[in-house]
Image (cartoon, rainbow, N blue to C red; front, side):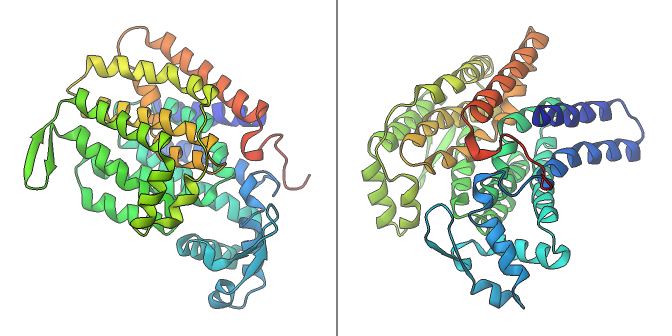
Length: 376
């Protein structure tokens, strides 16, 4: 199967680069490894990926028929799914500008898809390199199986997620201003990127035993932090109407659509995530003083809860992507520590193949299977 072959080939080349001493050759191997999934994204048929026909293709055609950027911004098109009218101004200006520039320069839809993927994969890889002593090939393999095909669908949001993920390198160095600046940049690609500020808050909590409350500094044990987080998440799930009312009162009514609906338990989403949540919890118990292990646990608890939002509206699950992206760090991390490393890595690879096969090949999520080339 073309996806799985590409995933393993790209990851294997990343691993091969470890064995090369010459810097130029090492970089060339890495570039080639990362180009493989980008080329696959670029040569796909325009029906591969749900949102491609909804806004990417229509916006591309608008640019091709527009004399200038202002004319493009005044454009409209029909949403193929709903039959409603979309305006270019409905789309975040950062994405519109990027799409406009690439299209005007290259005037080719496949190049547009290719370069979108180049940006996303490059940011992911650069973000992963901030975590030293990790097996990058395993991190990239985890990314490909868990997240790659999602970029065929929700392109705007994936660009925003990639920017915020890359910004994690500044959190690790406690350079919070740079993180916030990149978070602001991500907002120009998708409005949901405001969730990046929650990531900042969670990392700050993980990094410090004392939490500021107005002018006071209160020492809170990690156990209490976890309990508070679970309580807040439970409130969100079971009091969705209350939360949406708060958003509206704060002038954030545009985010209500992510939470508008009725909640029901999704056991499959829970079961798919629980094996690694448990492994991360075990590692946290061994490393209670590690901010990274606490951060990993908090993010996975959130991901576990928010995975249930898929029962609310079709778009609600997208919120969880801002948290689950970090599992491309944490899953290999727990497999690379303690005893039985080889067995744990084999378990991870088996899990990734199963997860991808079930969610993409069987359930048909994101409408990316079967894969078709653009000339077919």
